[in-house]
Image (spheres, rainbow, N blue to C red):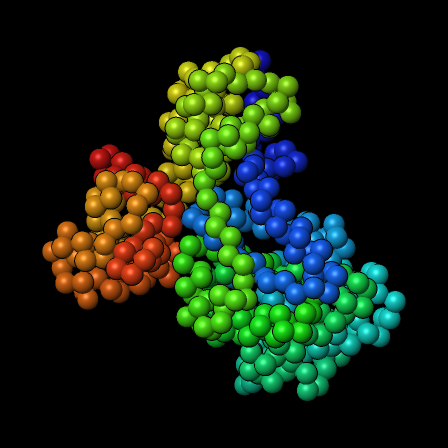
Length: 399
């Protein structure tokens, strides 16, 4: 009998999340980056791009673990559209410096870099802020003077990255800064990040940035700095092949000494479309629904409505609720035009469908892009950032 308590697809279950199946190419590429940078060889930073639900965040966490295993300093942040970069970046680099400090033989040198980091962090406070309202970064050394504290994020970030990278070089390793939802960085912070990466690439300093974001991230970076395409290696993360999708299901099940019928694997792939987040949702529901071992196609069919309901509330619904009535109208038009398929719709076609002038729909479209619900697949076209979102909207309308 399948034990529901031991469900390997429950969040946090297993030692290797199923979303990482089929990502060997990306893991190998990052292994090469770590080794090349540690040996003083030039290497570009990396940006993972893809739709929601393909496992970018999980993969980013695995890359951080790889850096730590190589005894690098590593820090991870999640960008937010309403937040400046200084504070979260300061916390991430503080963590990375602490990783390095364990092996550094000169405490004074570590404190010197921490002082620069504190000076950088304190510039996030407004000049006219009262003392009680001023944020303190929790770095227990005096702030440095005249280094990374100009208030110009581009100048300060270059100086800070340089000092942190030199500290890593002292102990023969490097620093990895991982940024999730990188498309949500403010334009001035994107520009500063590109400038800092450019400076590091010129000097060969051992610090790499690994970003993860939606498919239009390359356009965001190139709009900030024309040379950004030379700074980053862009890696597209997509849905899994049939072979990898089956492995994502089979490996966790076999670790629990259970089994699944081939026809059930067929049904799971058809339902999930190969997207890791959906694979996990449907497989979890099928495991819970199975009264006996192995899991059958009937178990998958019985469990599908439960998985779909969970996705409708937690994955699709939470995003749909963020949209205004005008934005929902735009989303529904996209779904109708694409007939629920994961395809892009022409912006002019959306206007014709709604009987509106294209210019009148620009505010709704731009707001949806800022909320991360749609992205510009190519000039004049718009697409959902969430797989199967069009199908969800059509199903919702039918209900």
